[in-house]
Image 1 (cartoon, rainbow, N blue to C red):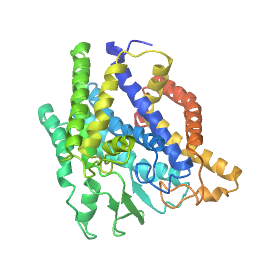
Image 2: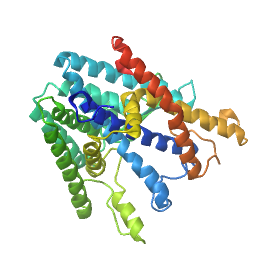
Image 3: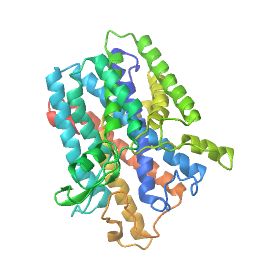
Image 4: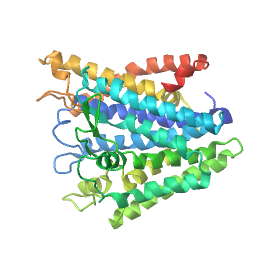
Length: 397
């Protein structure tokens, strides 16, 4: 493998980090389908959780911020080979495609219910909407775009107390932007009710910042300059998180508090808000992610190559892993006395029947099996994409 600091493989470091978070994401979704307590309580609920379960969930918090941030960076890198107009069209069409995937293929993967009784506007949908927004934002001058991203990420928590009641269009639009809630039945898709699980406003800011970060990967920027900037940005974000979280004044609607043990006090300190992602949540995740990106900028070896392979086909991995995990859960359910139809759900993210579940150790074993099974498929697809660059549709999966 080429050194990741060489001009031809700068994207390799981005793919490596993206691949790592995709693998970690699979752990969270395996827990959703297999863990005995997955549907009984939130693993970050300090009144019910334990430290191992908490960190099993907490480590997966890094996935969405890194993925959105690097999606913005990849958009900038893609734009080096296209005009602004062509890049905008690509981002808009890919964004619409991702939103449709969420409402169809992804939804069926989570529920195994072809009647599509309910829609959750979640990760991939918000990713698509953020890409559509970025297709407009890229026409701003870079300093203005950077200021916009910072303003959104740093300032959106000022809107935490703003709620739009009722069932009108305003309530729908505001919930899409910043307020997680069940959408009134007046707003449906194919006649089915919807729930906004991923308010999109903060994610637009994250993707805009990722796009600006892509400027450090221009050929004329020395590798040493990029590495220094990445290191400083990561340290600054992490330091700001510690300061703001310690003060408990701004940046997250859920303040931390002393607990009965030192370990649980630490858990309270780290237990920031993801829906929508608070400023502190984003500082806590993107800061270390940037430090890791600096670290892997010169990485090599078998593990790095495997992560890069997955990171180059993230949507392929994403779609397959949901179906594979759900199929494995169905198989285990039948083996343990349930009927296959018990694993068909009405609502995404509630995939299991009552009294279903396995210990957390089993979750980790299944997770490793999922990654092992998907890696050869990702390697095949990555090679197929590399040898069929003329097929335009491959850039959408």
